[in-house]
Structures are given as structure tokens and as C-alpha cells.
Amino acid sequence: MQGFEEQSAAFAERIAGELAERRLNFPVSMEVSLRIKRLADDPDATLDQIATVVQAEPVLSAKTIRMANTVALNPYRAQIDTVRDAVRRIGLSSLRSLALAVASEQLAGDHRSPNMRTLAYGLWRRSVDVASWCFALARQTRAANPDAALLAGMMTHIGQFFLLARASDYPAMEANIDRFAALVGELHHSVGVAVLEVFDMPESILDSLEIEQAYDGEWPPSDLGHVVLLASLVSEVPNPFDGLLGRSPVRGPAAGTAFGIDAAELSALLEASHAEREEILAAVRG
Image (tube, rainbow, N blue to C red):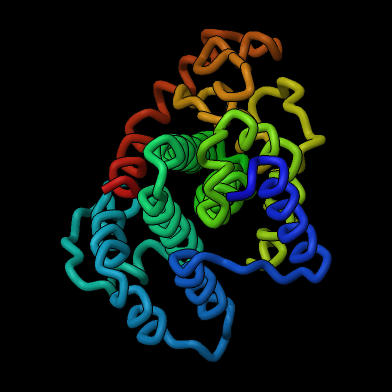
């Protein structure tokens, strides 16, 4: 069996080749998300066609209906019990986010190594928590469209997730997970950008996830980028790669003080956003 150096070199070469050709080999569960994205963007596609694709995935169907019945998206509590009505209620942008969350959850359980599976599950929890905060903070501040913010939040760690899913073909990396984390640290941004381009993400979402962008503490948040960065700061669910790389970033409300955000103002915003964040989080997690 090849050692870590050989397998990591082969892995990096394979990914680099796909990036150069702008051709990414998606895991099967991610293909469902991509198919929904393409249908949603096709002006000739009907709601029935989109609903049929959703219904082919039982977990996605159940979570679509559950999300449609949350107070945040269904304030008058008219019970929704069909996928077709649920898709109409939550909208195509939220459906894209939910499909990606379900695909990521499936990927999290699809690993041979218990350590890698734990890592994938932790990254999935982090992604959906950031996305839920994005939705709630955008709704409260009106700095961005909440559905767009939800989708941007789900994309924050897509490069890491993609690399994690592809690593299952290289057992030496599962056996050397700390060294694998360092490799992911080198590759995940370029891979994430490539994934976003394959998914034809709007420029606003691409810009909001730029690695060079740093939150400058502007208050209140005024655009999608600010919402995503603030959500990433206040989420208390850690990114498991941080631990493997020896990082210990401040999380939660205390993270805002490093950017000069008034603690009382931030706490008030988080308190006002908490209920909606919990509802969206529960719908996505299921």
C-alpha cells in the first residue's frame, strides 16, 4: 500500500487536473443538488419536474415539507403536506440550500474511517449552523435576502466538504488525518471556488465567500458578505479542521468584540434572531 506522501501527491494531482479543466467529479449525493440547481435555473422547467426530483430523495422530501411548515416561512400555519406545495412555499433558493445540506449529511456518513466520519459530521454541523444564522441575521438586519444568505452560508465550507468526500479513495489520508487536514488547508479555497462556479453561483455569493475579505466590524451589517462573516463569527459550532490544525478561534458573541462591535448591540441582534435560527436549524437537521 502506498504511504501518505504518495497518496497525497496523487490526490492533489487529481484535484489540480480537475480544477484546470473546470471539471469536478461530484459524489453521487451532490449530483442531486446539482440537478436541482440546473432545473431551478431552467426557465422551461416546471414546478412538477422539480418536485419529482425532490420526491426521489425521501430525506430531502421530508425536510422540504418540514421547512415549509416552520413559522419563519409559514407564519399563518396553513399545514403543507405535499412536496409540490412545500417547494412553492420555501422557494427555489432555499431548496438549493436544503438539497446541499442533505447531500452533505449523506456524505458525512459515507466514510470508511470512524475518524473521517466524525470529521465530516462535525463539518456538516458547522455548515448548517452558519447557514441558519445567515438566514436569521439577514431577516433581522435586512442587509441581504434571507434565502440568498442561507445558500451562501451552506457554501462557506464547500471546498473542505468536497475534498473530504473525495479522500475516501485514499486510505492513507484517513490513517493520517492530521496531515490530511493540512493538505485540505492548502487546497480548499481553490476547490471551493471551482465548486461554486460549477454550481453557477451568483456573483454576490461568490464575493461574499472571498477568503481575502475580512469583517471590518461595520454595524449594523450592510450586505451579504457582512452577514456571512458575522454568522461565521457568532456560530459556536467549531470547524473540526481548526482543531486538527491547532487553531482556537474565539466563537459566539465574544467574537464580535475583536471587531469593535458593541457587545450589547450584538447580543440584542442575536437574541432577536435566535428563534428563527433555531427553526431553520431544526428543519435542516431534521
